[in-house]
Length: 117
Image (cartoon, rainbow, N blue to C red; front, side, top):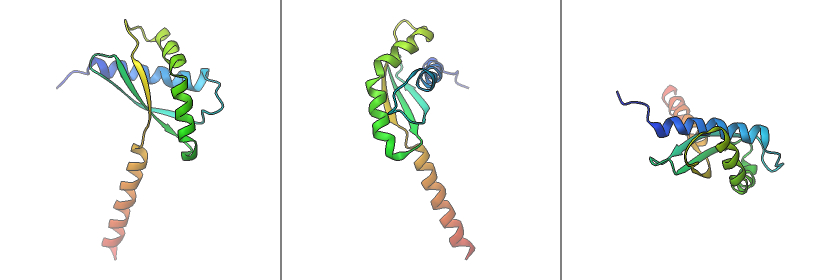
Protein backbone atom coordinates (compact mmCIF):
# COMPACT_ATOMS: atom_id res chain seq x y z
CA UNK A 1 0.00 0.00 0.00
CA UNK A 2 1.36 3.41 -0.98
CA UNK A 3 1.55 6.05 1.74
CA UNK A 4 -0.56 9.16 1.54
CA UNK A 5 1.66 11.53 -0.46
CA UNK A 6 2.74 14.85 0.98
CA UNK A 7 1.39 16.87 -1.93
CA UNK A 8 -2.05 15.28 -1.34
CA UNK A 9 -1.98 16.16 2.37
CA UNK A 10 -0.91 19.73 1.64
CA UNK A 11 -3.53 19.93 -1.13
CA UNK A 12 -6.26 18.92 1.30
CA UNK A 13 -5.07 21.55 3.77
CA UNK A 14 -5.02 24.24 1.08
CA UNK A 15 -8.52 23.16 -0.07
CA UNK A 16 -9.90 23.64 3.44
CA UNK A 17 -8.17 27.00 3.89
CA UNK A 18 -9.23 28.39 0.49
CA UNK A 19 -12.81 27.26 1.12
CA UNK A 20 -12.83 29.06 4.46
CA UNK A 21 -11.36 32.22 2.94
CA UNK A 22 -13.88 32.32 0.08
CA UNK A 23 -16.87 31.68 2.36
CA UNK A 24 -15.94 33.83 5.35
CA UNK A 25 -13.49 36.55 4.38
CA UNK A 26 -14.24 37.54 0.80
CA UNK A 27 -16.83 40.27 0.37
CA UNK A 28 -16.91 40.36 -3.45
CA UNK A 29 -20.56 40.36 -4.64
CA UNK A 30 -19.53 38.66 -7.93
CA UNK A 31 -18.71 35.50 -6.01
CA UNK A 32 -21.86 33.44 -5.59
CA UNK A 33 -22.18 30.06 -3.97
CA UNK A 34 -18.80 28.42 -4.61
CA UNK A 35 -17.54 25.02 -3.52
CA UNK A 36 -13.85 24.13 -3.69
CA UNK A 37 -13.96 20.55 -4.92
CA UNK A 38 -10.31 19.66 -5.42
CA UNK A 39 -6.75 20.96 -5.22
CA UNK A 40 -4.06 19.40 -7.37
CA UNK A 41 -0.51 20.26 -6.34
CA UNK A 42 2.63 19.65 -8.32
CA UNK A 43 5.20 17.32 -6.76
CA UNK A 44 7.45 20.26 -5.82
CA UNK A 45 4.51 22.11 -4.15
CA UNK A 46 5.11 25.22 -6.26
CA UNK A 47 1.81 25.34 -8.14
CA UNK A 48 -1.76 24.48 -7.13
CA UNK A 49 -4.72 24.00 -9.45
CA UNK A 50 -7.89 24.76 -7.51
CA UNK A 51 -11.11 23.37 -8.96
CA UNK A 52 -14.34 25.10 -7.97
CA UNK A 53 -17.97 24.33 -8.57
CA UNK A 54 -20.43 27.21 -8.93
CA UNK A 55 -24.11 26.70 -8.11
CA UNK A 56 -25.46 28.80 -10.99
CA UNK A 57 -23.93 28.02 -14.39
CA UNK A 58 -24.63 31.54 -15.69
CA UNK A 59 -22.38 32.97 -12.94
CA UNK A 60 -19.45 30.61 -13.61
CA UNK A 61 -17.30 32.96 -15.72
CA UNK A 62 -17.97 35.99 -13.52
CA UNK A 63 -17.16 34.05 -10.35
CA UNK A 64 -14.03 32.54 -11.87
CA UNK A 65 -12.87 35.99 -12.95
CA UNK A 66 -13.42 37.37 -9.45
CA UNK A 67 -11.49 34.48 -7.90
CA UNK A 68 -8.61 34.98 -10.34
CA UNK A 69 -8.46 38.69 -9.49
CA UNK A 70 -8.42 37.86 -5.77
CA UNK A 71 -5.68 35.23 -6.10
CA UNK A 72 -3.12 37.40 -4.29
CA UNK A 73 -5.45 38.01 -1.36
CA UNK A 74 -6.43 34.33 -1.12
CA UNK A 75 -2.79 33.21 -1.33
CA UNK A 76 -1.69 35.69 1.35
CA UNK A 77 -4.52 34.72 3.71
CA UNK A 78 -3.94 31.00 3.20
CA UNK A 79 -0.22 31.41 3.88
CA UNK A 80 -1.05 32.64 7.39
CA UNK A 81 -2.45 29.20 8.35
CA UNK A 82 -0.69 26.86 5.93
CA UNK A 83 2.85 26.87 7.28
CA UNK A 84 5.04 26.10 4.30
CA UNK A 85 8.40 27.49 3.29
CA UNK A 86 6.85 28.57 -0.01
CA UNK A 87 3.13 29.07 -0.61
CA UNK A 88 2.17 27.60 -4.01
CA UNK A 89 0.92 29.75 -6.87
CA UNK A 90 -2.86 29.39 -7.08
CA UNK A 91 -4.76 28.86 -10.33
CA UNK A 92 -8.55 28.60 -10.38
CA UNK A 93 -10.51 26.36 -12.76
CA UNK A 94 -14.16 25.34 -13.09
CA UNK A 95 -14.79 21.73 -12.07
CA UNK A 96 -16.92 20.01 -14.68
CA UNK A 97 -16.90 16.58 -13.02
CA UNK A 98 -20.38 17.09 -11.54
CA UNK A 99 -21.84 17.76 -15.01
CA UNK A 100 -19.92 14.80 -16.40
CA UNK A 101 -21.27 12.51 -13.67
CA UNK A 102 -24.83 13.73 -14.24
CA UNK A 103 -24.49 13.07 -17.97
CA UNK A 104 -23.27 9.51 -17.32
CA UNK A 105 -26.16 8.97 -14.91
CA UNK A 106 -28.65 10.14 -17.55
CA UNK A 107 -27.17 7.82 -20.17
CA UNK A 108 -27.30 4.87 -17.77
CA UNK A 109 -30.96 5.61 -16.99
CA UNK A 110 -31.76 5.74 -20.72
CA UNK A 111 -30.03 2.40 -21.24
CA UNK A 112 -31.95 0.84 -18.35
CA UNK A 113 -35.26 2.19 -19.68
CA UNK A 114 -34.42 0.71 -23.10
CA UNK A 115 -33.78 -2.73 -21.55
CA UNK A 116 -37.04 -2.65 -19.58
CA UNK A 117 -39.14 -2.28 -22.76
